[in-house]
Image (cartoon, rainbow, N blue to C red; front, side, top):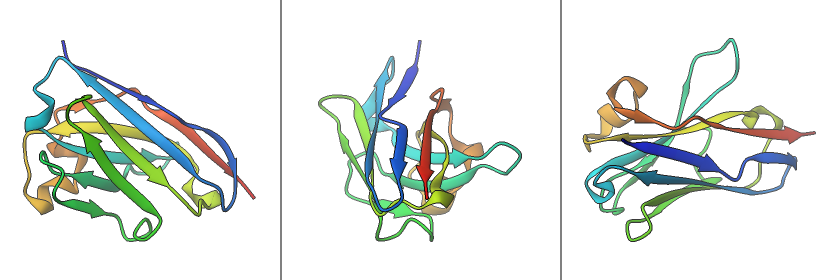
Length: 126
């Protein structure tokens, strides 16, 4: 059974930082690209970023570039999302997801991810 478990969310002031983790089990982690998405209730899910299976390539949503960094440790079956210079508009539930696809355009859409975590809340106060 595949499980993705996010952690590290919480409340932070604007300008602060958080590091989210997503621990994976039940899948061959090093063969999956991993993505991060976020969602505010009542709004569409938003692509945050993704990292290919080997960790050599990362992609980010436009509003995250320069502030967020995705990394992975295949030995620990874990992917990370380092978020700096947080803004109130970054407040959302953050989800990690896994896909066997590595093609850039496919990584942007949540429809192409097979496995999802339960999400972790990030709240940025002004």
